[in-house]
Length: 401
Image 1 (cartoon, helix red, strand yellow):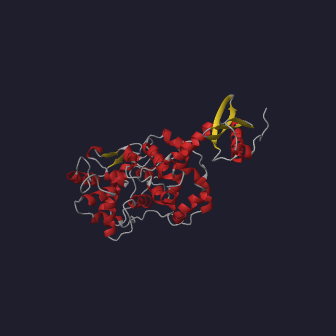
Image 2 (cartoon, rainbow, N blue to C red):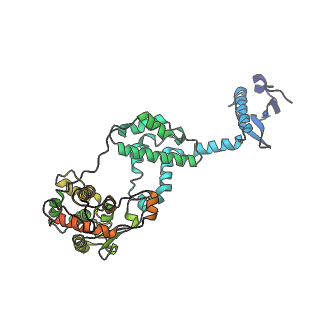
Image 3 (cartoon, helix red, strand yellow):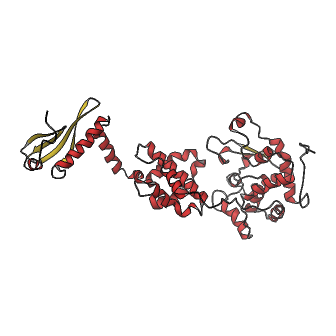
């Protein structure tokens, strides 16, 4: 058995053609074209040979260091040849930078997002605040400090956006780990520790007070797409997406059936939502049908449907801080302050989930009939039929004395 370190630098420099053993499986193969280092090893009972480079590029000392590294790897059950191939492939694959991995993770997740996220909202936080700084970096090289530096500019000033960007980045890192890339799975959490608790206090969407809501509603008197859309939004307490994509086929009698695809929920978990329509809401719907295009009640100027921005701009032009989404808060506050609506009914009117997951499994009622009188009374209040306050008790409930 050849002893270890049998060769010397002088011998390597002037070695004759042939195979010369340095020990421990390290060999020097010399041909007329030059010398080549070769390591012989066994892994899982299988004998293997791998080249370590030519003597012009790899010294005797370096060859021994490589040999020891790969022998240790083989003892642990890892095939050095396979490991080296994987590393070379990883270095050559351009998608291993964060930008490409993020795009791949996004494409894989699209099927779980509403409408396949055609507006790009899911990807936007990471695209705007992480990729400009880290996009070209190999995902395996990204450290907690790198993530911290990317998120720091918005961590305290745009806390909600920063939270979304961090969550999206964590999903991308997990995707990279699933690709068997050597990433730090905890890199985002470590970055959060470095950043500390955000100082920014989240702000709710500004809303019109319920006392001022009738005046605004009654000012929407023009039979235009924007006015009608805002009126229907106020009357139903709906989010803007169901309003924008309201279709003539969705009205069944006096019930508006919003498809699950237009509801705010994880794809596969959303259900159709039924809204009992007040007489006023039905009247607005009927008026809007004259503007319908391809069945959609509120079409855009050139194509598609009306945008969120169109409704928001109307409120901006009137110098209001409130935005359309805030009317949900307006309705909810009115229900609490001016009616006897139970918590469950109030939350269901806004299509919020009520109760525990187990409770929802067995509770299939959408409280349609319980909601109906409150929606009628809300419409009457907005029209000004109840005076300045419109305090009211549902005939379905008796107040507790």
